[in-house]
Image 1 (tube, rainbow, N blue to C red):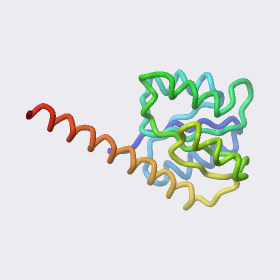
Image 2: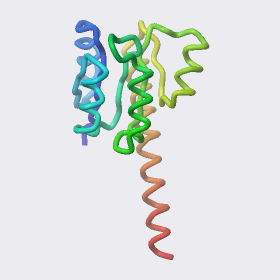
Image 3: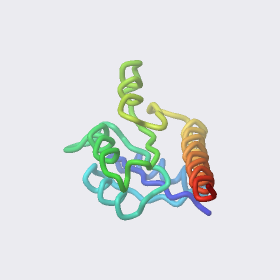
Length: 140
């Protein structure tokens, strides 16, 4: 089953290139070019992963992340930040905000795919763990 990835990127050229990288790897990609659109799509589409640009007009990536995490319907969706802000303080801020991965622009396609796979794998392991805990509780 293909993982569904919500790509949130306001630069059309970046959106096109990143989307192509992901679809070439077999992922189902949906896109948003603004934070408000991303929040709506995340709630409706329930993607397996969100790739989120930080520097966007109106609502920046950190605000989108905060809103995603505060909504029970989207709180558990793994989020990987895509950003040109790659100093140590930026990475620390991202981790504190609850991201599942961080990719600094510019990046190599292999770096992006590696981070996406890691975030998806970690998420799937957490889901399996929760299901086995639930099954164990049901058997008691």
